Amino acid sequence: MPDRTPDQPLTSRGAATHRRILDVATREFAEHGIAGARVERIVAAARTNKAQLYAYFGSKDGLFDAIFFGSLDRIVNVVPIDADDLADWAVRLYDEYLRRPDLIRLATWARLERRPAGHLVEDADRRDDAKLRAIAEAQAAGRVRPGDPFDVLALVIAMSMAWSPVSNVYAATADEPEEAHERRRALLRDAVRRATSPA
Image (cartoon, rainbow, N blue to C red; front, side, top):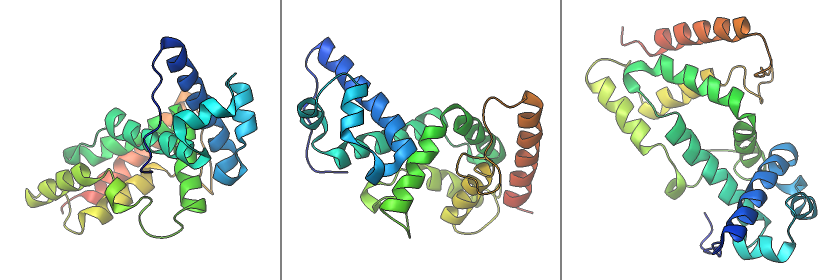
């Protein structure tokens, strides 16, 4: 994350503007990526100006960082890991991708435009320490297959994204019939259980 600390809104009106900028910019970055996003479109749709945006976020990259790292925090908080039931965790991730397809698109743009190889973020900004500890503890207790906890984590996340908005096979949406989602959830749950079973 950038070293610069952006100005925080001091009034309720400022807080509302700050929120509008984040909401509009989330859609803009999810649709167009970092390079393709336009500050002019963001400020027009957010009913503000460039000076206010730069005061809050410093730059277009600073705005993307605020949104992207906020999305990583959201996934950690809204979909906490349960290493004793990685299959259920994968299904909850699937459901979150249906609710918030923009979150996975932001991560994809970060991968394409910033870090084409290795971890998605710098080591200092990673949010997977608690997840890796939980998996390692479940492995030590014999509840999850042995192996590098990071590889197990990456496998489960990849499986949960099989029908995500960035799938190169099929991108599911929340508008599809519930039966289709239930069928996928059942398949995902069974596949993750089999892949992570200690047997």
